Length: 80
Image (cartoon, rainbow, N blue to C red):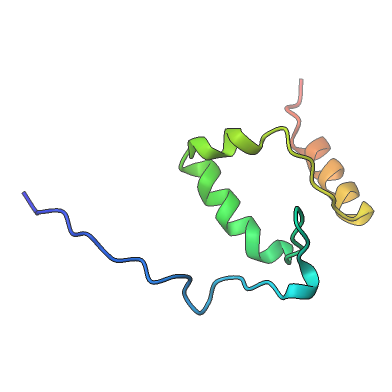
């Protein structure tokens, strides 16, 4: 059996999202969708329990993205 290896966390890596102060207020952060989609997809796939803490939170998206999501949802419906 291979022994567990502990690692020390030194902070975010260079390729992680960074947020400028102009995009942050006390309760909101603006980041590109491309930075959070892979992380959320991995969390959903891994069934991370912390997602439940945020399932009732509201997010603001553009009307264009919302239209695309609705169209995608319609295409995914099973055919009767």
